[in-house]
Every structure is written in C-alpha cells, then in structure tokens.
Length: 568
Ligand code: FRU
Image (cartoon, rainbow, N blue to C red; front, side):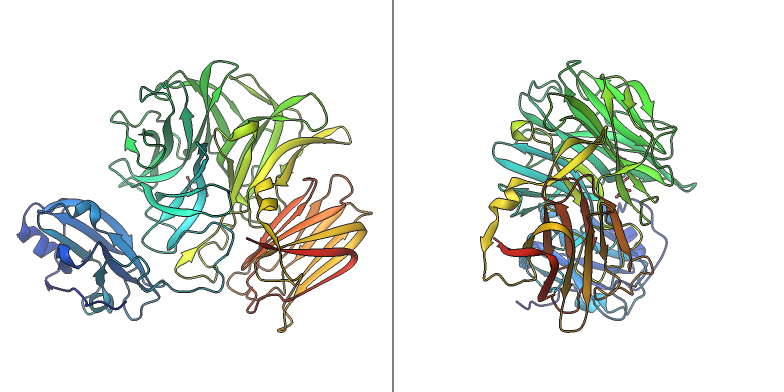
C-alpha cells in the first residue's frame, strides 16, 4: 500500500546538539531535518536505508524531551530497503518529533520517509530468506539470547538491530514457537537504556520466586554495553523481570547487578543448580569463563575462573553455557561448558568449542586437553540452550553466520538465521567423552512426504553403507560437494563453487570434520541459504551457508541412497 509522504517541517540550520532537547528552539537548531509526527497517519515511521551510507542519528523527541537516539544509515542517493521506527510508545499525546542528524540536507531519505500502519510496507521478497529457519522480519540478528520454555511455548530472544541489516543499536528481539519450527515475531523485548545497548544474555524461569517477582516469573540477565568518551565500552550485567510469561520485561531499578574493570565482561548465562540450591552464573571475560553464585539473581558471589591452558585461545571467549548431560548408554552424567570463540574457529572466524568435565557449583574441572568443536562448519556461532526445557532436554540453537562476513552476506532487509534445533548429550568414543548433537525430534515431526525431488527447503536423508560423495547442483553449474570418508572417519563439505561466494575472501572454503564412529545415516537440512549436515546419531555436525544464484535442483549420491522430505 502506498501512502503519502509525511514531511511537515524542514529546518535548514545545522548546529551542535546537546543530549537533551529541552525547548523547541534547541530542537530547531539541533536537527538538520525535523519531522512533526501527526498521530493520525500511523504507528510506524519508515526510515529509508542505504547500506553503504555512513550512519546518521535519528532521535525521538516528545514535548521537547529527548526519548531515544539510534544510529541509522539514512539513504543519501538511493534506497536499499526500509526499516520501521515504532512510534506507538511515544504516541501518548503531546508533540512528537523525529530529528535526523549527520545526514546531508537534500539526501533522498528526506523525500522517501513515510508513515503508516502497514507492517508489510515495502517488504522485499528475498530469494535467500530461509523457509524453515528463524530469521528477523527486518533488520540484523546475531546471537540467540535468553531462550526459555514455559507452558508449551519456546521463547527465543536474539541480538537485534531493528534499524538496519548491519550490526549496531543492540536490542533483544523476541520470537515464540510451539514446535521449534514455526516462529512468530513478537517485536522488541529489551531496548537500550542509560547503561547502554543490550548485549547477549540468558533468561531463567524462577520457579521459587527467589528474585521477589513471584513463582514462575521470568528473569532476563543481559550485558549493557556503553561506549566511554575515551574509547572502548563499559560492560556490566543487568536484570529484567517478566511476570506475563515473557511478553514484557521491566528492568530492575538496582541495575547493574554485576560490574568489573574488565574490558570484555559479558554474556551472562544463569541457571538454577539444585546441587547447591542456588543460581549459578557463567560469564565470558576476555579469554576465561568466570563462575558466580547467588540466592536471588541480584547478589552475586565470585566462585572461580576457568580457561588458562585449556582449549583454543586464538580469540575472545563469548556466550558461555554450562549444563549437566547424560553420557549415552551409561548411567554417568558429566558437565559440559560451551565456550564460543571469535576469532580462532577451525576454519577462521567464529565457532563453538566445548569442554567436558565436572562442576560442583563452585569450580569447573576439564577432563581433556585437546580443543573440541561442537560443529565443524563455518557458520555456527553463539550456541546456547533453552532454560527449563521439558523432560530434562538440553536444546541448542546457534546463529548461522560467521563474524568474518556476517555483515556482508548477500541478503538485504534482514541478515542472518538460526540453526535448526539440536538436542545435546554426551557419548563415549575410544575412551573419550564428546558432545552429541542430534536434530531435535521436532525436526522429524516437521517432515512431509513430497515428490521425492530436491527442493530449496527440504531435508535429504542419506543412508550410507561406507564412504560416499553427495553433490548438490543447479543448472548454472553451481555445486556443493560433500564427502564421507569411512576409512579416515572424516566428513567434508566444499562450498567453493556453491554460488555467490565473492562477497568475502573468507567465504569460499572446504570444511572438514572428524567423525567419532561409523556414520550410517546423514541428515542434510537444506534451506534457501544454508546446509546443515548432521550424523543421525549425533557424532558429527557441520553448518555452512551457501548462496546459489538458482536453487540446487539435483542431488547425486555415490555410495548411498537419498530420501527427500519436504519440511512443513
Ligand atoms: C557474540 C557477541 C557477544 C556480544 C554480542 C554483541 O557474537 O560479540 O559477545 O554480547 O555479540 O552483539
């Protein structure tokens, strides 16, 4: 639906600006362009974006009082796509204005800005938008955050820039699902505040109401990150409560609840530890993980640190998770610490490593010296699990991208998707204990019989006898070649000729994984821009993005038999 453009007032002077607009005269001086927002014409102000434009500032001012400011690549010469500025929180009566700064007068955005109620306004149909993987409707997404399950609903929050498809302005976006396959967009859950933008974190269901908000309330714990005038950021941990099952959150007035001098001090993962009858917290701090405990999620006691001498240290440790898992086929349980790292991944950039060992609520001890990766693809990062999942399950989602090129991948109005849901456990192989990664049963439930032909969003199940080569290709000669070498116990995926690969030198690669045991069945989750290759018994996982200019229509299997399912 086309609507009328809504420029009402153009102020031509561009003078320095204080952080608070107290009087209309100040606003007039401050803004290169200022728009009075008439309530009647709609809830959203549509901001025209040009991705290669420098960031300008967009500010909301209500009755002369500064409300918020975002960095936005306002279009100068041409419009790539639109993002919505949701005016509803400010449409309470009073005079509402939006100021645009640091964007030259005469830029195209000033004639294209629009206001209406239509959530589908100028929504681009993108050929690489996945069909059965979660993506934000518009804007940038990175890490999954604060995932929890309650009363039949899976909640997924995520690092979100609502104002463009590149990293910045970090909010927590929110989506919900009842089957881990179909997701509903719920909007923004946490927005930046005086302590800074909202970096990654976790949610817990507080069954006993220890935080004072009642039994079953949900507590989110996040990092606020605020730039300092001297460069760098100050990172601190805050909490927010939800007493309506995760629909809305209220930030705790006593934030931050945990501070430190460390430069990288972030990504809190909290969980209830019945063994000490307290909450535990794992925080990523530079190249170590720090453990804390608390009776109420507000007062935290430092317990210990883990990291020196273990695993990969070729980058910064981020997004931890810690859980007790069953060792398959035994009555043993062990702890596993997830440690995402960037850079330093096995094929460059970001990846997920893990450590197996023991944790007594105070200290983590690791039982192996070697570095272990949860997924041997290039696009599997920031992996964390849902709190409060039923039946003792530990279900992980990853961000399917890599910091080496996440901002450049050839999508437009949205960037990035999550992996399919995967259940984690442990298995033994040659005297060592490894992480098992199995597609969640909800993925099997989503299968429907198609006509047996490869489609651009399907699952290909390959039954293997021994070594095999699987080739996906299209009529343009673009192809992905996967090889299972049963002698070497290795699986590899070659995406060097997979389609669009030239947006980053780091993209065209062959990734190789060890397989701990013989693979009898390989499951390939193929969607518009990704392939997840997972051993049906969970002893190998590899996640890679691919951008074919036309969908792959052919699958050739030498040494095995493929069955294709459509995904509902
Ligand atoms: C990981 C990460 C986190 C941080 C977030 C910021 O991808 O760098 O450590 O909280 O992204 O968006």
